Length: 141
Image (cartoon, rainbow, N blue to C red; front, top):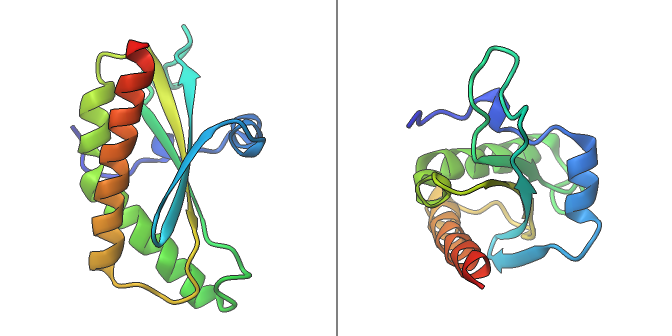
């Protein structure tokens, strides 16, 4: 598995983003983040233009201006979240490898102070494990 964070792993579809935040989707808090996720069915045309397979997870990182007034701080927080996800995404990817659906994930910052990388990484790991467990439980029922 590629340990990078490619453009195809970013959630860019406005339609999917609107559905994700429309309500009725699962969410959880893992301070300093709130995670909203939704299952997206794989389609027949789930390949990119270059023939590469679509990744099992697409992510979006949001840091509200209300929380961090300065762009420098917002960008720093987004960088911390993306790096923590990049290092721990294998937890979720391994569980979704043989599934017939993909996940759309949104990470929303809910803190007012800039956390350390260690705290973001720890909460990211915890959140990804909880999402994996929930997805496994939902598909079994």
